[in-house]
Image 1 (cartoon, one colour):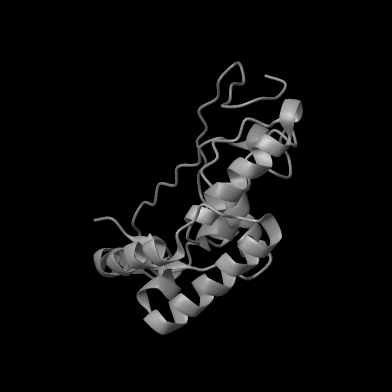
Image 2 (image 1 turned 90 degrees about the vertical axis):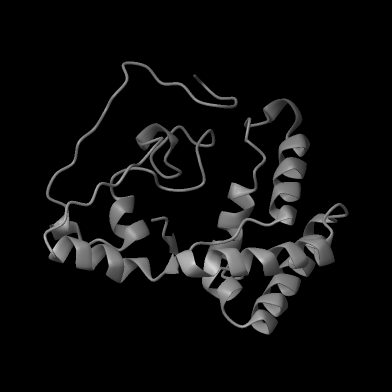
Length: 180
């Protein structure tokens, strides 16, 4: 029953390459990122040139055009050399076929479930200490994993959130560097 949002942004190989380059470039001031490309993917989202799942399962020509433009922008800005553009395109053509049946417009899906009286459980790992706006910046994740992101990330109206449960540790831990 896996459902993937059509609005989800895609992490590409060059995002991971840039993440690693940036982390290595920090030297002793490295943040300890996972180098999985999350930060650079969020950068693509915020600069409005990211590629989303809807692009992947839509017109292949449109997806390829957006992908190539984004890859070229990263190559020019970061001198990327390791990403094999043609290989990544071939893989994503296969991914499109595999993922297509799982992709849905999830805002209406979740809203319909709530309006239909179903319980919707939203899990949010990391929480406030790793929130990019409220956490221990710069040792944070690239998003807002606190409860407010239920509204912005899932499109759930604040008035429809009726209960919030939290599991709290008496200490803070994290992957990577930083004050903890």
